[in-house]
Length: 227
Image (tube, rainbow, N blue to C red; front, side, top):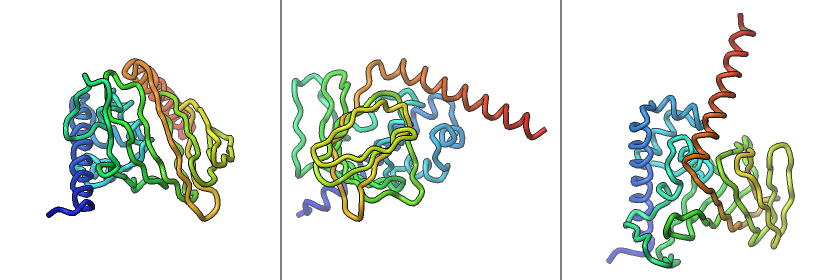
């Protein structure tokens, strides 16, 4: 008889493989190489390759960045791999079936709390944060998000500002502003996070076009200074 833990590990492996396959197909469809996509989302080629092969999990922020570049709805990357019936009026996630992921590039573990219905304009996650990493990496992606502190104390960095949050506090922010969060002190903290985006594809195309334009300007400026 398969244990509950073994079943969860099997579902996580299948989910990572599914996410990797979607990313690989979308990247190929847009004619991007691993090098090009890695550069656009700020990941190493090796790390991105492992994601595509389903060998490693990554943070929610990086998945949203990848979805934006590839013009893929975030719901497709976070979809349950056993199939979705989006015509239903509701969907239930049982605690025994929930799978937690810990991205190698993140200081938190995350668990998806809601499965897709209809167009799915919301993504809901439970995050368990650890202390601030030595080399914090801020993420940015189209959309907005709200985080509610369930337990512990949290610090949120949004752009150049750092905000302290306690249990019961919440923060609503624009996701296109670089941001990250960590638990204060030596303990951990839990957050409820809800992300929302309207007209994902159109916003993503415009947002990433602007990012690419600014990147080209910086590269041209750097080349000019080097001459």
